[in-house]
Image (cartoon, rainbow, N blue to C red):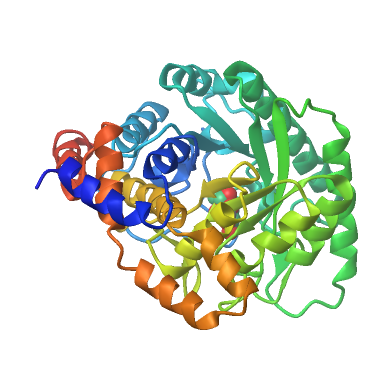
Length: 417
Ligand code: RNT
Ligand code: ZN
């Protein structure tokens, strides 16, 4: 049976429930995923005086073929993008600047250092997102940046964040789609603090200074990312969830929720509806924590499906900016991007193929038997046949056929590095 024939049969089953599959696929096409560039080179970046990865995050594995130059990274991204259906965005970090062999301090970075990225994004019809990099640097070696007791160190990072927001504004203007600039800092303490407040006061003041610089929201949207703990900041993280939730609400910024940044049984899927009641927009770093914030490649697991369901059934596709954040160096990096991003899109499709309105109504009526029964039955509806057809229509490999492309790319390109 052809992909199309299987699709037609599957479509009929969904139509019985009033789901217009063609509309669903049209809608799915419009959802951009912000694909993080850092899976391609293990969060390395291209600084001339590149330091070790720090900030309490870690990449393990040494699969051959990691991108060593911006050209290699873009080529790898192009390969992954050719295997992922839809038009997406690429998420950059400040350490991916191109400075022509010159040492440029992070507080001195300018739009010109990202010109190649912008030209490349234009060529491929991609939006860009951005992050200042407040780790892997001498001035972050105490594990403190924007909350550091030393005002000079704080000043340096404040200026870096301002420079980053200006670069993001330039992206947004050039590409005609606003850039999401996300601030994440590693600040925290390994051991029980004797003062939790003072560092938070300083972080708040630093953020105020960073956001004093007005950048047109048409071009740049600011987000702040909280965290629970990191390696070396197990006992206390300055930028906790409550800290940033309060800051974002009061200052009209976006909260960015990383799925690896909460207690193990605390689910981001359960936060989306509450957060959207108080703020127009929300940003996500979809990741997969395994026992800790390990940033494994995103799989089509229950939490991913639930996150997508919350976005879809609350009509929040325009409100939740979906980004990915994982880095695995133990497998082919192009495959990692492809698997994780295809899964994100699959989960959205899955959510769109569920009779959400009907299920909501059952709940309202107190009909929990039917609610459970249908949720469970829909798990084995032929969603894969719709996904395959979508891939075919979008001109990307169907099912596992993309693996052949990745294997060929590994043989021809990656293994030559
Ligand atoms: C770290 C945060 C942060 C980073 C990236 C590289 O725990 O999740 O988002 O992963 O900025
Ligand atoms: Zn993150």
